[in-house]
Length: 353
Image (cartoon, rainbow, N blue to C red; front, side):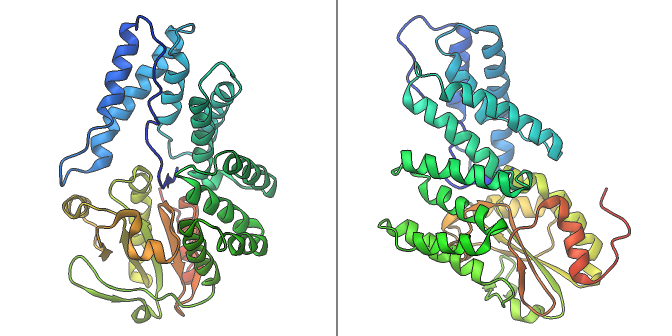
């Protein structure tokens, strides 16, 4: 599951209906409030929130089962959906996503519920699909999801997540219909909202980079001067990530295995960190013994290269060939080993375990 920009982990708190609250509901509210706390400087956000999210998820799931007629059941169900922890297996993720889809649809279609809650349910499941792009495998799936996003944007033109949803539509189109995706981005560059227009221009620039050299120059956190032009002759994996991103952390062991497997066969790796907390990043890199260079400017989603190249969800991995040309900006983690082997021109006799 990708970490989608501007997603609020547990959603907006819907005001409860006036009445006597059960002890179970009071506990849910307490657990929800615990998610609003911020980790101290230097503390890894994924580790900080993991236990809290699981506690809210488990309590919400129990509440939904044990209190089917409680006035707060809908809010508890939404919190359960929003704190779902997606496993690594594609089959398991698809099963969970379908369950969340069915539960969210029931909320969306219940006209007795507050409009904000129903829209939050719709937005949550759209985000979950977009955070699992490898599960969107056919043109038919893409067309359906692109239409759903378009319908949502039309209903919610002032949603603070508008940029991300519009760019997600473009990404879906670019995967299966590149020219249509570019045309959609061209249309967005003329949007009245300057932020949408600028983001579309950056994403269009990234789309036009395929098969062209990438300009990537910076001083890494360890003081190393990095210039992608100096990596000619090597295959380069550029990883946009952050130490606070759960899915980046979930995929990291595979990234490390691929790097270790091919580092002596001309594979280089560059990290572009969207962290804001320098100490948290440094602590995580040291803890995981990550040997590759990292770019950090402390701007989070406003990271220089993320903005320049329209990166709106992470992890996002690029592959650059031996000639320095960008091959792809979308590498599903389960295909990383094969794609790197192919670019290196080596036979992938042994897959990752």
